[in-house]
Length: 90
Image 1 (cartoon, helix red, strand yellow):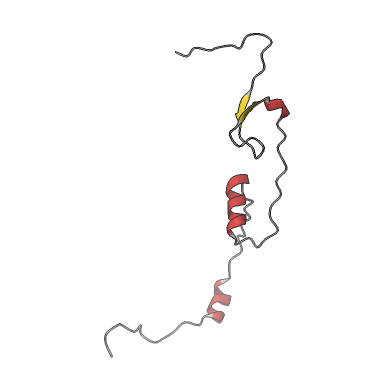
Image 2: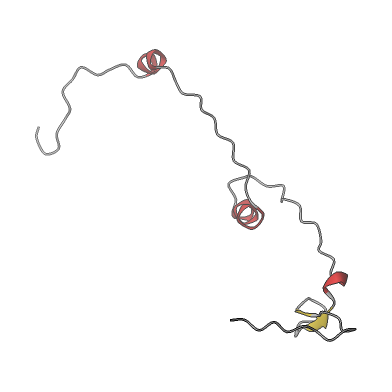
């Protein structure tokens, strides 16, 4: 069971907002809040700043389904016919 309270007519909905100008906070009308557009930092994608940006605003994921063909893989890494070496035995 929930009780719904309605504001009396003529009152504005206000929210508590803490900003650099009001460090202890103040009541403001949500319609007057302007959110600055945030651009991604121009940095290498392996930095903590980019990781934090991705966590906050979402990440674009691209998957490449290309694989190396088996014959090319054998050419790059030929099979070794020697038995595997074991540790501790010489």
